Length: 289
Image 1: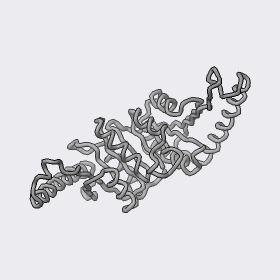
Image 2: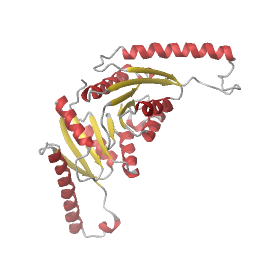
Image 3: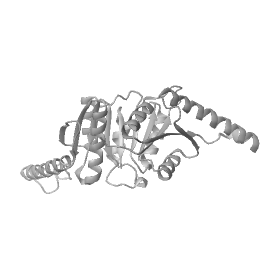
Image 4: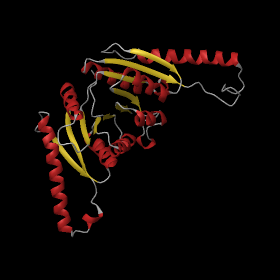
């Protein structure tokens, strides 16, 4: 099983009871022998609050932070971890998370999200800027059906991590694992959507060669991992985002495990396919850098 060393839970929900994301993080930390903490966040003072004098504002912020920390401490007691370390930061949420990852060495960020537009928008900002894997959990997460999406063009190490994490989650929940690789055949402006300069026979030959190359690269990537749960595999010639979304709906996946584009630099974002998958998915998503 893929093991983590230092996990942080970031709440994006105001529910009074502990969310499923925290229970999942606790189970994962116990299995991995990892450190676990909660990083709460206080928004910047509103204009009416900044009209207070400095001492009044200080007291107000201290009281608000203490109340926020106590609610999170209640979560910790709910999940049987009353001694769980809790931090409460303020300012820019994505920056607070990225700074905590770099300063504390977190190797997994678990976002406890709800279904509100505000929570979804905040989660996407964290996903775009965080330098380590980020797991966006939905309120209904169960973990019994896991779908991993890999791209052999994005490097052996990235794909291996995606597959190991997906296999570990399926194993942890005694669930099922599916793996997909999808690609688009390049097209041009030559009439019927065929690549420029190619006729029907040329397109067929090119498509067969491209498919064979993808099949070979996919088999090589799969061969690098020892799966705890035997996966079903899917190779699709078509839009990666649509293929991942379609298979996720078909198999009613609880968790998607995907890579953050073709790069590892958070400042470059997620990549168009991952952005679309995160925006459209109704399941939890684990984004790997």
